[in-house]
Length: 365
Image (cartoon, rainbow, N blue to C red; front, side, top):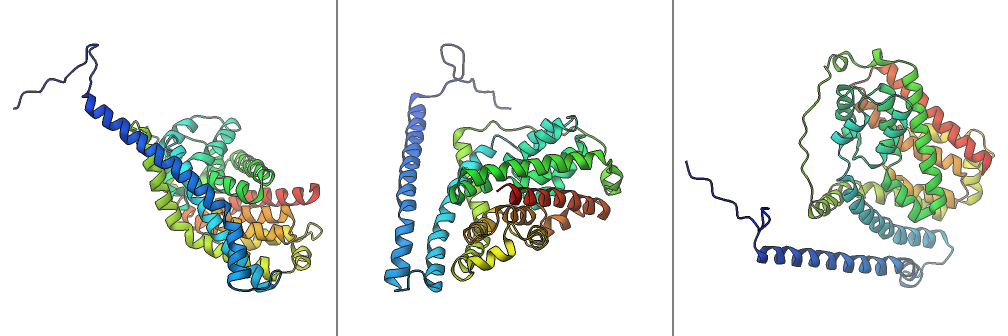
C-alpha cells in the first residue's frame, strides 16, 4: 500500500494551494463576470430594437398595410417571437441558478411534519421555486408520503408548482405589467392553499392507491453537494438547455395562435364571448383549458392577445389557470398514485377555486 502523502498546509494549519492556481481561478471568474455583463448589455440593446425591427420588416420590407389583418398578424409574430424567447432564456437562466438552492429533497424536509394550514401556506410558497414538471409529480408525491407530509399539504404543492412558477410570473410582468403578475401570483397561491386545505379536511387518504399507502415512512439519507457559484451558473445553463429546448415549440405555437387572434379576431367578437358581462364565459374557459396541453411560456402569448382584444381579465385568468394547473397529461400521470375518486375531487376543488377567481375578477375589475 502506498503511503499517504502529506497535505501541504498554510501557516495557520489550513489546507492551501499554490498562488498560481488562486490567480488562475480569479482570472477565470473575472472573465466569466465580464462576459456575463457584456451579454446582458447586448441582450438589452437587441431587446429594445425588436419593436422597430418588427415594424420595418412587416410594413416596409414586406410592404404590408399597417392596420390590415395580414400586416398586424405578421408584425405581432415577428415582434413577440424573439421577445418571448429572449425573456424566457434570461428568466430560465436566472431561475435555474435560484433553484440550485431549493432541491426537491430539501423541500420534502421542510414540509415533513408540518401541520395543515401552516403547511399549506409553506407548500404553496415552496411550489414557486422548487423544480417541477408533470413527469416529476409521481416521484414527488411518493417522497412526500414517505416523509409523512399530510395529503392536503402535498396537494397545495402539486397545485402551486406548475401554476404559480416564477417563469410564468416574470413573463407576465415583462409582457403585461406588474399588476397582472401580482394578481396572478395572489390568486394562484390562494387557490393552491385553499384547495389543499379543503382536500386535507376531507380526509381522503384511503383514496390513494393501496401500493402507495404500503410504503413505510423512511428517512432517506441524502448527501447534498455544496455548490460553488460556478456550479450554480452551470445549473442556469443546463436549465436553459433543458427547459427552453423542450418548450420552444409550444412557445412559437402559442405566439402563432396569439398572432392570429391579434390580426384577425375583432374586439367586439372577443368581448361578446369572453367579456365580463357574459356569465358563461368563465366556466367555458375552464372547460376549454383543461384538455389543452401547454405550459406557462406557451400560453402567456395567447393570454396577451386575448386581453388585447377585449377579453375579460377574470375569464382569461381562469383559462390560463385551468390549462396549467388542470392539464390532462398531469391527471393521467397522477392516476398512477391516486384513485379516480380522488382525482375527481382534486379537479372539482381546484376547478371551483379557479371559477371563483374568474368570477371575482370579472366582478371587481
